Length: 245
Length: 256
Image (cartoon, rainbow over all chains, first blue to last red; front, side):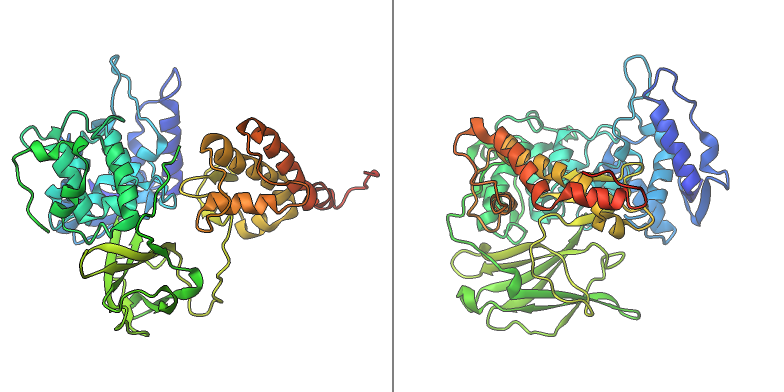
């Protein structure tokens, strides 16, 4: 389907649909708002998006990036109506379900971004991973700590790392985080990456908050920063190497 | 509860009066900025490197300005990676290049640039208002990373709303209470001496209101102090009188 953006009417109807999912009688998915002229307006005939399932946030972000690039279109991360339309288009493929099969959309920001909210913009299920991939386009694999997760369930590591602008945009810090928390053999996070325990992402943030009082962390080579981390992160016992830079 | 950060190496916070970052939007060239830095008072080594980072969400551009000795004023840096100049923030870093590469000697963060035709305002705003699409909420107080008053950007004139006596009377005492509760009850911070800490700035401001007094040493007394401080704030700024004056401007008034 060609890329569209919601009108205010479309956004309002999508919002109402999301609200209905938390009631005993959820509304049916409002498919019409994706193309009804009163609800959506065409953005580009060169960008075609096909709803499908994605294995990870990396796959989703990579797909979007490839479609935008092929259509020579650069989306604004402030275009709330565009990103909400995209989220609606892919809603059925992304929205988690409970054990009874009921849709569990979670927080509104996951579907309708508030671009002016600098604290929560990263929670949008499409704009979030897309923005991260865009920031690491020269080496996407260094950001796998926040891109390996299922698209509909970002989880605690994403919350901890992506909520810190200075962390998620830093090649050094993302490389270190991926080294610590991502298992490339399984394509998933290592055990203990989430939560509050020793060696978790929360603990890494605590340590980095102290380090950045003293060090320009974005200028440090990743191996140097890794060597400074306390033993709780367990990285010294791993034999896989981390290249400098 | 936030963890206190310990500045063992005496990294210096650059004062707001010592830098200006000016945004320029050239219709042809796109957004760019110029930086004026006055670093003499800090006694940084001349070989220390100076860099500026411009950022907005996941977009970041880092600019190397050279060393303390070689910074060039008046140079213009293009902000090519940003959709627009709106909401771009800056941070300045002075780092050691010699024995401990990457060691931070001085910095400033969350710098809002100013436009060429605006006056430079070096005051510290305790509660800057930010217009945000809040749907049907009129306002919301956010406390991370520091207090911000979010005001609904879809109001007919959000700036006038925030400045109105009615809004201030209804909202500000409640905000004072909520901020003090966060500082004293939740975060358990009582330090009033750290000029760079928003918590200290707020406590210092509230303590200066007549009738409030110093923050009690005993945590058991903090709730009562917060209540009396909020009341003193409302009293100091005559919130009830202002509210009545504006909200009932066209109505016959009973004696108060």
